[in-house]
Length: 296
Image (cartoon, rainbow, N blue to C red; front, side, top):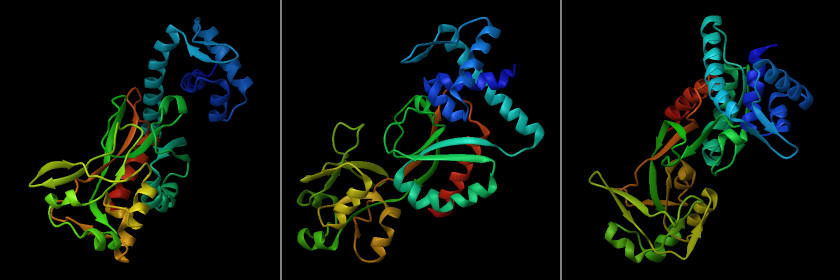
């Protein structure tokens, strides 16, 4: 028996909670995966997974063995690469923040694929909470403050942000020169699935963060419709500068309150805390840091 292949099969079934999904991930027939696990359990002398027609769940031995397998497989891969001096290889599943992907990641992706031709990338776009283990994702790229303590994050960028509005809006309401003038203005308010209400506007004043809640008749969820609303003259917004750089250059949007800008928006790569960072994830994270360093 190939113990390493059997361990990889067990880990993938455990994480996906499904023989069918694990077989698709590993590009193996489901029957082969079932046979591999059955032999592996017989060799270990214990049952690792309870399965029926609807679900797969670990036994107590399976829970304990999974933690050891994840650590051992990561250390084995790292040791193999160190002594064989071979490039990272295998499938890497990454979930990307949509606007970051379109502006920064995808245009630079040919460089990554040329550097690491043996890594098979699988990309998705889901600007939501992703259960990395259950969905079989290796890492996610996210913007904003980290709030999930079950994930480890590495900061790869701090994106400058602006407060802005369309010329039509500023003709109607005037251009605010000081924060105390904002009471006369309207906002396009932004919400997310994880927030209990609209995000306040943020300003850095003499090195201190100041938050202001602005009135507004429009509340949105989604970066594209948020900026589109500002372009339509529906109110003030705050967003990363890159997102509207072209529109600013064309005069379609104007930055205001430049003396008290919003704090930079952090961009991070997240991966599960119970995983050693695999060589595939490590080179991808390092490459992302290069991409953002050269673009911001």
